[in-house]
Amino acid sequence: MTRLLRIDASARTTRSLTRELADSFVQSWRERRPLDEVVLRDVGANPPPIITEDWIAAAFAKERSTDQQQLLMLSDGLIDEVASADIIVMASPMYNYGMPAALKAWFDQVVRIDKTFTFDLTRGDDPLEPIFAGKTLILLTSWGEFGFAPGEPNEGHDCLTPHVRTASRYLGVEAFYQIGIEYQEFGDKRFEASHKAAFATLDPLVETLVGELGLHSDLRKSAA
Image 1 (cartoon, helix red, strand yellow):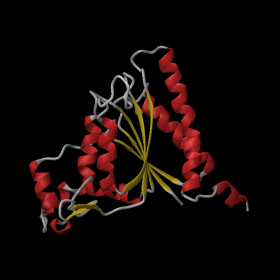
Image 2: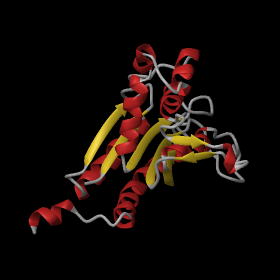
Image 3: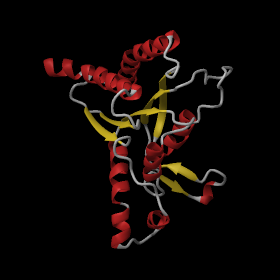
Image 4: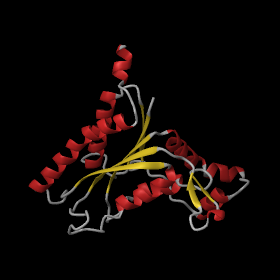
């Protein structure tokens, strides 16, 4: 059985394009793999707390007090969700050209020394090494503007996608996919076309992932 971890980061619980994309992705997955488990972590509706000086001291402590263990309890639980996931479906709009504060707080809680990565200066200039491996992340995004690809008008202004790609390496992510909707604030035919194209990409991506992971349909298994 494959486990999907769905993370919603939009502050909107309704009228959210990224939540709609995630709904469609999960539905498409379940049509092919109905026995797989989907774990939902809605950081948009329930943001994790930002890390503090006391949290950092607890994370780096070799021996922890009861209070420090309590302080890291949520982080431990969030990391357990990541550790047990094969595929992470991350639905996040871009706010002010970067990730929502709730999603940044989630990353700060889960990317943790000796839990998701190790730090060893004997490795020279690359002392950080992920502990987990083999995970796949699908980033489902929406942008109010457009043209963030190389050579386009807003090249370099999308700080969400590269940030997620870089940070997720320390969660064991090795395969990274991104689907996004542009022109949201314009609401014109270009938005309609981008919206249609993004949703049309979901089914083929699910089909590709099922094939690449060597997964067979649970429907066919149960019918055998």
